Length: 85
Image (cartoon, rainbow, N blue to C red; front, side):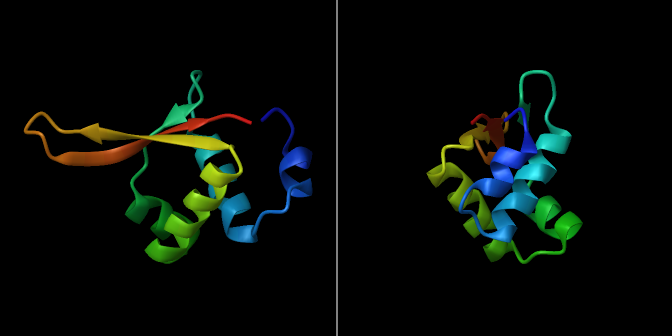
């Protein structure tokens, strides 16, 4: 998203706007980042369930895509967030 004004005009709850801005701030040149839900929650002072709801809002709005990442031993790692929209 080039312009945050577009984000503010969307019918999104404030939790989703906060999380999107957080992810955008951490995204690199490829518009991707991978902070964990506990990290996002702690940094934004949101509960983990609120953070999960915000991420669902953003996926539904088509602003992010998520991809599960895995550790070498096959266990789950944090999600990869791809920003778009």
